[in-house]
Length: 110
Image (cartoon, rainbow, N blue to C red):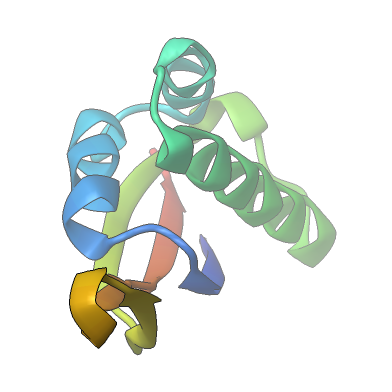
């Protein structure tokens, strides 16, 4: 039994979100949620909410033991970049790139 959840257009760069995704990949769901709770990263809260959503999807789909679920796959892809400009000295402007990412979590039962 597999269950998945997706977060699109998350306002965090894919590189920073992958650091958190690598921590929980392959872990059991209770261990992953415990680890994400104490990680001091912006994307940790996003990924924790996403894992909890995938667990809720698994519960809704059928009878499944939540403690028996593991994170079989977690993928972080780059989303579109928002381009903004910041005024600088002498009438110039510099680009500010606000990166986004798409995060997908897949859970399977042990």
